[in-house]
Image (cartoon, rainbow over all chains, first blue to last red; front, side):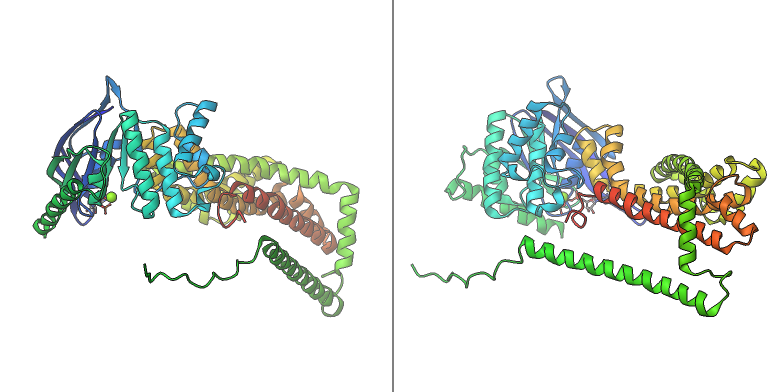
Length: 246
Length: 280
Ligand SMILES: Nc1ncnc2c1ncn2[C@@H]1O[C@H](COP(=O)(O)OP(=O)(O)OP(=O)(O)O)[C@@H](O)[C@H]1O
Ligand SMILES: [Mg+2]
C-alpha cells in the first residue's frame, strides 16, 4: 500500500513554436488501499501525470512523493502501448524488469503470464504476437514485479470486450487480495465506475475538476441500478466538462 | 427466437501448409542460385571472349591461365603468408576502429555538445580519399606493418562512428523510458536496450568499414608493405605480370566474398533472429 502525495503540480511542454500546459496546478493525495481512476478527455494530461509519477518526466513545478512505509514505493507501469523489447522473448521481457534472479522469480513471471492467458507464448518474440497479446504481456510485466503502486494507462482499451472483462475481474481480485494501490487511467466511464473507490477527473489543460469517492459495495454488477446511476452521473459531468472546454 | 446472425458459409480453405511453403521457398532459393551461376558464366565468358578475340594474352590472360596461377599461389603456401599479413593488419586496425568508433558514436548520439565538438572532424575523415591517409601514414611510419594498420584505423573509424550515431539517435525513447520506470540502471539499459537495438547498425558499420579496411590495407601495402596481398600486387605489377597480378586480385575478391556471405551474414541472421522478417 503506497501513499501518493502530489502538490501544486504543473507541467509545460516547450516546443520551438509553442508552450503546451499538460498539467495545471494539480494536487491530490492517495493513501493506502485505494483504486483511483483518472478520467478525462483525450489530451488532458492523463499519460503525462503517470509519466511524472513514474519519474519518466520531470515536473515543471510542484512535488510528487510516493512512499511505502518509510521507503520508496516500487512502481509497476502498464503503458498505453505495450513497450516490449522486441529482441527478447516474452518471458525474458518479464525477467528483464525483475530486480532479483532465481527459479522462484521465474515461476512468478510464468504465473502472471498465465494470468493473462499467455503462458504458451513464453518463448516467442513480441513481433510474433498480436497487438492485444502484446498489451497483455505488458500487463503481466507490471504485475510480475508485485509493485506497491500500479500505474495503468488505458490498459484494456486495445483489447476485445471479453478479454478486457476477464482482465478487469483479474485486476480487481488482485487489488482486493494484495491491497495494492492502483492509479488507473481510462476514458471509459463504466470501467471507472465498476472498478474504482475514487475517481479523479481532469479537464483539457490538465486541471483537476473533480475528485469523487465511489461508495458502492463490491462486486459491482454493471447492470444494477446503483452502478447505472453512478455511471450516468459521471457521464453527465464528463459531458459538461467537454462543453466547458470548447 | 429469430436471429439475423445466420451462420456464414464455411471459411475459405486453410492457407497453404508448412510443407508447401517450404517447397516454394526451396524453389525460390534454387532460382536465385541459378541466376547467380548464370552471372558468373556470363562474366567469365565475357572475359574469355575478350582475351581470345580482342586483346593480346599478356594484357588480359584467359581465365584458365589465371586459375592455374591462383592454384599455384595456393599450393605454394604463399597465399597463407600474405593473406595472413593483410588479415592481421585489417583485424588489428578494424578492431581498434570499431571500439573507438562505437564509443565516439555513442557519445555523439547521446550528447549535442559532443556532436558539435566532433562532427566536422568525423565528416572530414569520412570524405578524405583513402589514398591520402595511405600516403600520409607511409610518410610517417615508413616501411612496415604499422602504417597500413594506422591507415585502416583512421579510414574505417569514421564509417563506424557515423552509423552508430545514426543508430543511437533512433533508439526508441519509449523503450528506454520503460526500462527506467522499472528501475533499470544505465548499464542495464546500455546492454539490453541500446546494444540490441544498435546491432543492425553495427553490422552495417562492419560491412562498410570492413570493405573500406580491405581497400585501404591493400593500398597501403602497395606503397609500404613488406608482406601482404598489396605487397604481392606491387611485385607482380613491377614485373608487369598481368597473370600474377590478376590472380592475387581474384584471390582477394574470393576471400572478401566468403567473409561477407558466409561469416558476416550468418552472424547477422543469428543476432537478428527476433525480427519477423528474419525469423522465417
Ligand atoms: N513530449 C511532449 N512534447 C510536447 N507536448 C506533449 C508531449 N507529451 C504530451 N504533450 C502534450 O501534452 C498534452 C497532454 O498529453 P497526454 O499524452 O498526457 O494526454 P492524455 O490525456 O494521455 O491523452 P490520451 O487520452 O489521448 O492518451 C497534449 O496536449 C500533448 O500534446
Ligand atoms: Mg494518454
